[in-house]
Length: 189
Image (cartoon, rainbow, N blue to C red):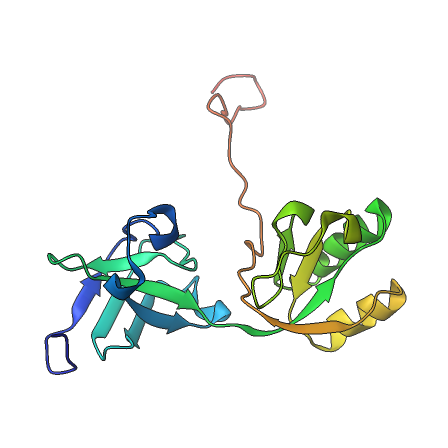
């Protein structure tokens, strides 16, 4: 049906998410694997499980998430993104102070992190973790020297788990208000 001999498919925008549409059968999805650090790239060339060459050129700021549809055939088959699990450090802060200090310090290092609310956290195998076991949620980051030192300073266990890692933006983008104006010293615009 679909083979590596066919022409490549092109993606310039994401076409929804397969998990948002419960009517999409699993057999109608051809997965393309992405590593966490590829999800913010604008231009990619990937190959799907069925061998389809996928050429992706997204608009600036677009982020690929697990389940995002990058191409839809007329017969209903969708090519969708699968974020590959990787080793991550998982912090389960015990207090508000530890949670905010950890997030602040990792942000100060421009270190990628993913913050999960307690009610949404789950293990690699999809098992839900009781919210009572992690009242401040979870913070995931890449295991490396600076992060491990910070975990030790905050007396957090070095829990390395294999998970999908979908970090938030590394830097905040300032937005100007609608009435922002540059004024001269004399008060005129």
